[in-house]
Amino acid sequence: MRKQIAAANWKMNLNADEAHQLLTKILHTKLALKPGQEIIFAVPFPYISMAVKKCAEHNNVFVAAQNCSDKTSGAYTGETSAIMLQSVGVQYVIIGHSERREYFNETNEVLAKKIDQCLSHGLKPLFCCGEPLSIREEGKEKEFVAEQLKQSLYHLTADQLQQIVIAYEPIWAIGTGKTATTQQAQDMHAFIRQQIELKYGHHIAQTISILYGGSVKAANAKDLFSQPDVDGGLVGGASLNAEEFITIIQSLD
Ligand SMILES: O=C(CO)COP(=O)(O)O
Image 1 (tube, protein in one colour):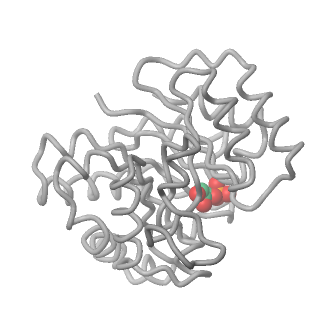
Image 2: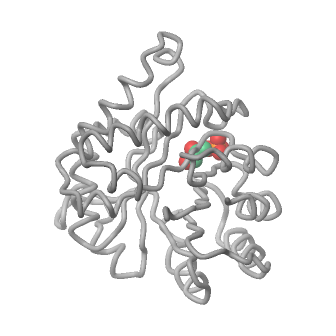
């Protein structure tokens, strides 16, 4: 059975009090996770220790960083290494979010190195892929995503790949209120799984969780998560509202 995951990506939002209150409110709710279901909070770096402490009191609730360095250690002012994250109790790291690709020029090649850093230090990468609107309009979204997978993941062994969670986030659906239709999401997720199957075989492909991201909210989560190849969501804006995110968690299949 694949893990079903509701992951919150807070991005660069909230002050310390707001972050604490939001997490407290969500974790004090009786979430009744079923076996195989997980919640991940990808919080800004300054709140990681607070979040790790609070999430450790709950089963199947984990903390993610939103980025990490592609280097191991050394004179890289302002960077945060995978080793540091692992040492403070982080379990996941978002790698390759489209905002990092676009605003911080992260290439598939650099992302492959970040993934290696995570895997070498016991962290699970939450690898994001997805096409911009112009590519979707040309009908080339599948080739585009296949290339992202190939360049950042296909150097991994099958054992390593099984540590990865993939998030498909069409860029045109992020923060726009324009969600992919359930059919568009399912089609791409099935395609991603098929690509993994071609490279790593059926068994491995069936074990990889593929999350959908892009304007997931309480009102559409159930429909999206009910698709056979959609294994949960990576949620931006709606994860900043406790009630919204709780409903999204409760929409996991
Ligand atoms: O980028 C996202 C999650 O990583 C999606 O953001 P929104 O849910 O705000 O569209």
